[in-house]
Length: 358
Image 1: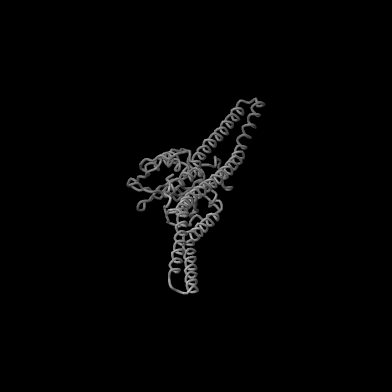
Image 2: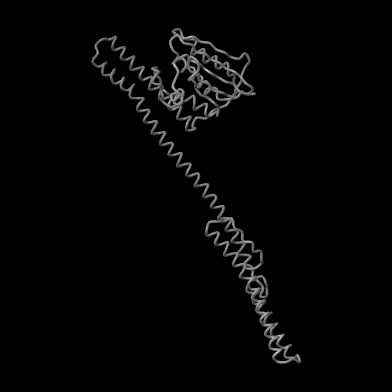
């Protein structure tokens, strides 16, 4: 630490000593002068007394300016800090101890304000983490409950047919039992694969790739595989597709998965002898995909729940994992695009929008 000179006026002590010596010197000098003046002693006394009062008041004023006022400012700033208000600024810029204390307080205020800000940010992150953990726990419980419910039917079938195999002597019936067991096993396998895929999408473990591909060609490929190459088809099929090529930038496999689920859902629930219609329309930089299947309309509350995991409309008797539309919704949500389902004349239409790649 740098040592101060004995008469350096950069300290409070040196300032007060200099002020007291100056005041004493002025009083002594004035006393000596009045003693030499040829004036009445009473007048000399009152002159000397008046000077003494003036010196005392001047010293008091200067001491207040040097000590009391800085102490008041420091005390006010300290009170604000005690109330966790770190916006205060101590504006003492003297070169003495009060100036150094003011700078130290300002530095401490700034550091405490930064620490409080970091603490608030950490607390906010912790609250988000706690909320995220709570949501995860709720989702896991919901998933476990739903999975337990969904697995009861196929597991019950497998158990019943397995017990039947033990006591059934006829080969034909045994073969039917085995076939039913295999179908129930396939259903469980499909459900578990879909569930794992959906969980990966929801948790962010599944990363979407990006490539530029022709969308209309992909629609034709999926529709041809699901709707045209079906010998036992009992529905009509029509489409409205643009003649020009339409490109998008996305994960081709995931977009194909969306089309698979939407078109497959239309095929599954179209009424006997009904119609399925596909359309792709382009407006400026956005395409609109829609698939219509002729069937009875759904209630509004059913349409609101149709994207939920394991949800099936009571009016629809077809079996499935109940996860196809949930997976499609999750993928489309990850691209932040609009999608939905609505009742239209004669049936239901599923749709989504997507940006066209340049």
